[in-house]
Amino acid sequence: MDGVEILPDQMIKGAPHPSEETMAQWDELCEKYQIKPVISDIFLNTNLYENRELTKKECVDLLIEELKLANRMGMKMVRLVSMTPSFVLEPLLPYCEKYDVKVALEIHAGLSFDKQKTKDYIAEMQRLHSPYIGLVIDTGIFCKRVPRVMENYCKALGTSQAPIDIVNDLFAKCIY
Figure 1 (tube, rainbow, N blue to C red):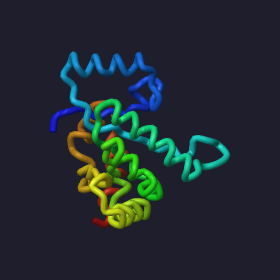
Figure 2: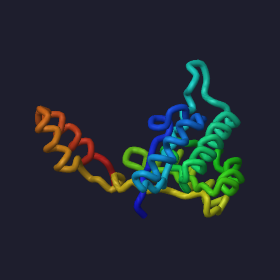
Figure 3: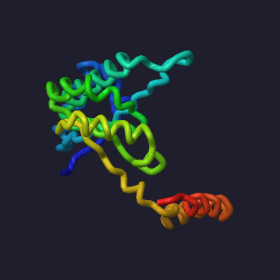
Figure 4: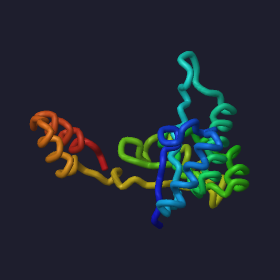
């Protein structure tokens, strides 16, 4: 499917509650450039406050607002970052259905299938068994070494071989 993926909190002024003017501009740009909105990337920042983590209700309430915005922007999927807690899924499900927006946890390098938060999410996803809950697999989880193109890019920027070797050694020590 062709389309765009955006990070509303970085790209849409006032998100998750943008003004009507901002949304009118979004609509105009989509029409003018024939943009098909596809995925909204959501970073649930559970550490908004210095002295405490967000409560479960606060987490769910924030995500409900993101689902509403995704729907308003014409997106059918919200990609949740890897550390999104699994407890949000069940209370979000009615809103996913109401706004016809799927949620999918991104699985990527460093936070792969063997991490407890990922396991918890998958277990809850399987328990709920809903077409509105899924996974987005970043193929970086299959990377066995620093890609040569990245290594060459770093060298072109002036990076010496020593830090590149350290990173490659760390990759070599990983168990796949």
